[in-house]
Length: 252
Image 1 (cartoon, rainbow, N blue to C red):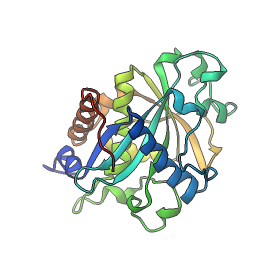
Image 2: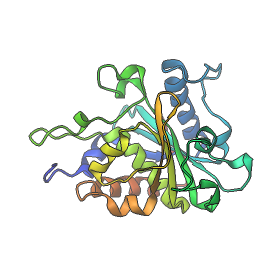
Image 3: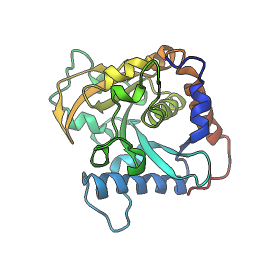
Image 4: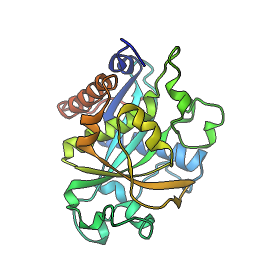
């Protein structure tokens, strides 16, 4: 569909993925989440310090996206919630929300090694980058139109980039299985790039209709379509590079 166009080079031209591994970058993540989740979408109460965070952030890895060229505006973020210990204090968010809706004949998260699972959550994209009409009052989503047509192809760099950034974090952490609460049609759209999202239960109402779903990290990486692989390599290299740099990255 994209012919000779290299999605990795296209991504680098406009965006950069940063793991939020320093206080400065984590604060930037919390500010974006407050702007989107508290001030715009009103999913959470407004806080005096304008930082949105919760108890899961203590055992989470965070992913930040910004523009790659000046003024290097912040674009969005997501997080990877880890479940390193057993017990109620380290249960993943979706395990609480979907306690009665998970089909445990498909998978029972409580029976999986806790160090091998994680949840993707808190995807937040700032208003100027939720470009479609009507998207300003909702979370960013992926639609058919985001992939354009055969004659005029385009690509949803921001949501896909954030998800792939989180997959890169999961790979570094040795995570095998990712869980996510998704819009029902996300699996269909992600199938276009070779990512298999497996529903594991009945939909619930949580900020709209959400479907508990599962992804396998190795399956994602191996299954990416050829035109997506340059994008994956670029994002994975950006994540790896951040961990080999001793000093914090400057944040706009």
